[in-house]
Image 1 (cartoon, rainbow, N blue to C red):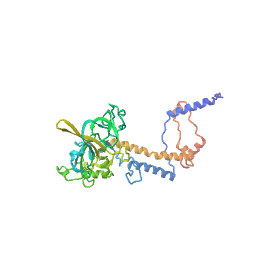
Image 2 (cartoon, rainbow, N blue to C red; image 1 turned 180 degrees about the vertical axis):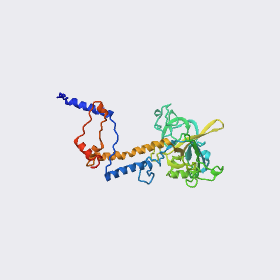
Image 3 (cartoon, one colour; image 1 turned 120 degrees about the vertical axis):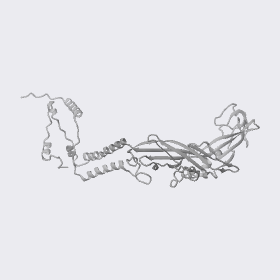
Length: 428
């Protein structure tokens, strides 16, 4: 009779079982087992999940006026294409038109800054003029912080205020008008104090025209195009932009741009503001070149309802000489409408690599339906234990017998189930 093997302590036995489990998990190979579960509700859920995933990758409605949100899609977002964003771009602008203030006619050379015409152009619509300034000493503007005084002791000689107009001389002098006094400064005098002459140039400004010439290039695809299609030399002399009838005439009325941005022209002309002209070049290069067209949109860029940062103005001066010796200047604070031309775009062309990657992703994602239905069966169904028993089987290779391992003996319940129901589907 064989000698009985000594029993291991409980702790040692647990450690041994854990070690065997880890060793088994490292060397075992798992392969899927297919079981057909005849459950209509579960089958319906499975197919619906697969259908939704397929629709997600193939087509999902998007755009304003739909209830569905924007999503990445295979056809609309053209995931089968190689793409390039941010085209190389060239912008040239030119403004034309004349206007009048109370006593003067203004032409382009006077109200357009800078004159060379790039992606940013400023159109002056109102000015505040401080004429006949000369270098000398005069009272500081009361709008400068701590400029008011009662005596010379309140003014420090040589002090320089970066928000002011000059260097203080140390004297407290009467202001230009009224009974107040301010510190005297050495500067261009008289200083700007808010009582300058005011001229409004916006009366005829809505009829100004702006030519925006834009050329783009996608170097990856070696594709170039411009926003002027006609080859006739006099084409731009007789056209105005219209998205439907003449989209390749990039001549815009200033009033049209402001209106499309949703702004009131008179208010904008008085306070100034920044309007963005956005040109989008979204091109499907699998189609003909004529299908690649610029799309224009307009919106205000400066914060309209923030008093501290809304509006737009700048200063410049015109210098003169009197009798060839004394230099004088006219200081102009200009309010205007600044036009910023911004170019965006994306080009795409069919490529095999992204097509394969996205198809593989779509096919892999369809497996989410099986995972979801397995989770429902294992968690919520009445026969979840039976499903688990049928789904997961363990088979020991005969190689283990040669290594001194005895194959596990199946339990009686397993033997009966196998002999009476070899496919294991009767109860499912």
